[in-house]
Length: 177
Image 1 (tube, helix red, strand yellow):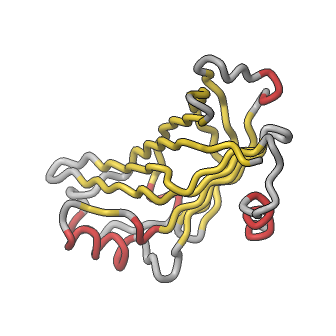
Image 2 (cartoon, rainbow, N blue to C red):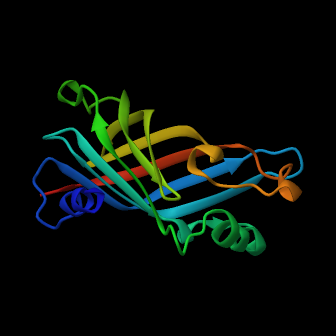
Image 3 (cartoon, one colour):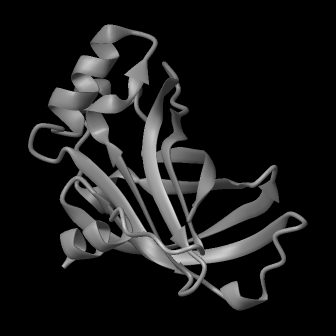
């Protein structure tokens, strides 16, 4: 079902009320006592359909870039198991999308299913959305708990990795005719 929804939302035959991006920015940050860990992914894909209020976002886990290559290797192999779980998705709905006025910055509540590391959880996120030069700008932040997604932290590094990770998203979406 998840793949069917993503295929429908990412299809080439888009209507005028759909906005899409393939270059969204996702940043995560783990503040821990011994070492902060952060990474950036500039290849997030997303689509918003204003006819229905539905949206979908997708990232490849291996596209996260770290300052230290060893951190990136451990992230992909030991924690995220990115060969086994290569993609993370967020599929949901914008509350009260019919009343949005995109001529000014709007704060909105988005609810949906966040899929990570083989586990799907229902989450709600507060985001801002506004139109600028024929593009939509989307910003959102939320926190996840690693234990909610069965991401194990070995005891030997438990002081290097926080139990909660802050995720920031910035995306410019272009209108599709």
